[in-house]
Figure 1 (cartoon, helix red, strand yellow):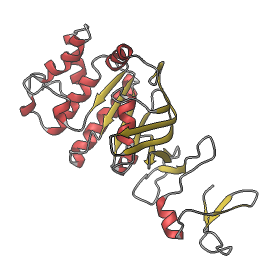
Figure 2 (cartoon, helix red, strand yellow):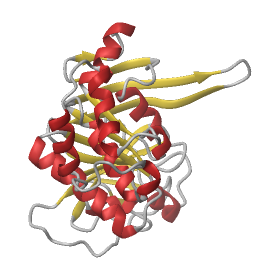
Figure 3 (cartoon, helix red, strand yellow):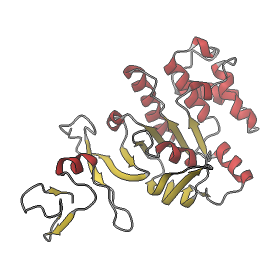
Figure 4 (cartoon, one colour):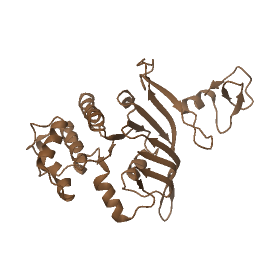
Length: 293
């Protein structure tokens, strides 16, 4: 569904140049439900904006379904945003029109696309658990209900891909779980590919795959364990963590490993026939070693 290779995004002003993505690689399968996590400034929101057709890549490759987003025209980009991708913002003011009811909000993108279908709009609100709030306006809905309306709006034109930017960032734990359950239902029952960007690492509990971005590059992945076994740490319970190696053999060592070994910008590598061992330069064997694969 998504293929990014060597993806670069550079923001330029008169006085400064910021590299938000510096050769990022990412694959997302059709029908997958996954999260992209990272600290502020890691590049995760920049990536989401490019996948949503809201920003243009500087270099590299970004393909969503049949669309090459590096080569599309402005007219094709409008069609892409109308029919292929649905977008959900953390700030509900960007998702909803406050003077319209929940039902009318869902009908708006249908009308803009020339495919108004009230019965379908009602059905979408029923899917997200708001069948009894059809005629409620924004100020009559809780934050979680507003976010569920936003999901229904994003589904209005039958997108193949649903993108969510910090969709649970302003919600409490119980409401956040409700919203995540809606995403899971949409993913499983409707077959929509779901990509959620967040800084909340606890989402590793709630999706099948988590990709961590650091400094504009994919660094690690958490994959759900098939045996269902729970790991002892809080983050990624029931998931296995992997470092990501790109096509030219680069990987990002987790920051906590580097700090523990007092590694700055150089390491020594050893290969014993079965595994690669990384340790600080000139470190004695048996001291401060860390096996990475």
